[in-house]
Image (cartoon, rainbow, N blue to C red; front, side, top):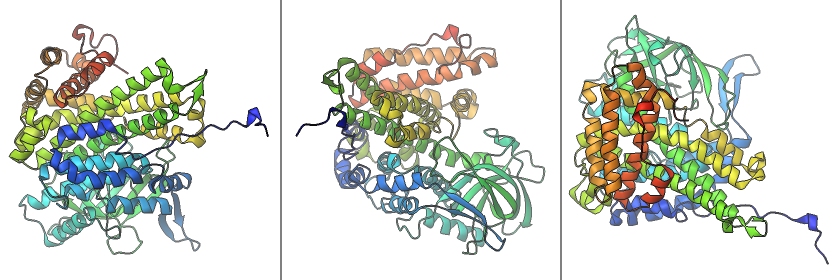
Length: 571
């Protein structure tokens, strides 16, 4: 029997264990974590890596959530307003997996043991594996973690709180950090409004005092872009009376335990380019009861703690998407024949894969290093961790204050850089797969659409570049830049080229910041931020003992200061 030549069927790419197959990620963790701790984490990470691959349970659940997007039921058959969002079993089970695997709890409950300064690295490693197979359930997790961090800090601050509010905060913190799927809460972060967008000072939502003793207010306003609309609670910004600055409020969406919303109307679900499985809504607040959290008029500084967490999540999700796209392209290259050879055996195709891999390696190292700094900003690292973790042994960051200073400058850098590079890398991987990568049924276009949100969420590239400028110019944050430079000098000490590049970067940035024209400084901010990312990654690669030559070949460590603001920003 002969085979009809038109009966050819291409073997599709598949995904193995997303932890054990990712050798670069293993090397990055080994640079950040003592070998004894990493060995204890292996079973957890290996199990989650298997669940996220082709033979695991997560991809089918994500597919169910993607193919059956959330649906808003505003009224029931009798005309009563119900504002109920219907999600699929797949979405709900991804919620359960997040709880079971401790995607949030790992950073809080101590179950993992060992040095608490390391817990954030394990948590973000889990997120890296979970996210690409989660239909973007990572988004509500980011806000959940941010809310847990903020509420935990408030409760530990020693501030005298009304008993009812303290009880609500303690209950919320338990729900946000549990591993029990039935008890696991998620949180929203309601900031974006129609007039302002990133300019939160233009918030129109008002807060009217109801009970001063309980710090209870009634909120009225319109939240234009609210993700995780099915959450249990949220933190929201609003203006009290005619205050020039905003205050922060804790809202329980269904405080009486029923399906009735707390003075909240869901106007509509957003029809977005991507993140289709994630319910994102426009909300009208009409007498929404909320408790003020933190001092009056200090809402933006208070919520900044939450935004730090969500920006790091955004970065982890970006590198997770990059790695997923590369994993598909690499496996496909071992199965697809063209011009008589497998794609993997064709020099240009192989070189392109290596370039993509180099970009991902650098982005992932920077991201996980920032996760390490987050952990060390929350908990003073033990001396054994400092000596046994290679990068920590080199960077010399031994106190929470030192970690916080470097974290402040690197969070906007890592978020803007990974968000921007994530779109380019996923697009390149799609192109490497070819025409079938452009076909919707392959699932690859979804990766590209979903990746496009990452340069936008939690601050666009330009917003974050200007945040870097603020760090460099604010007197109260003046320690951040010198702390970063000192850290990079220590980790890059073994490579004269990179050490010189760190010095040149310091001089170039300081030269730019001395410019008399504030407009010229701002016009330079984007290029400057990318330059800082390139040099920082090079230094970290040296410290981690990883391939810095490939990185420098991809990103020469140079910046022409004299042309900044004249030739346009880097795209």
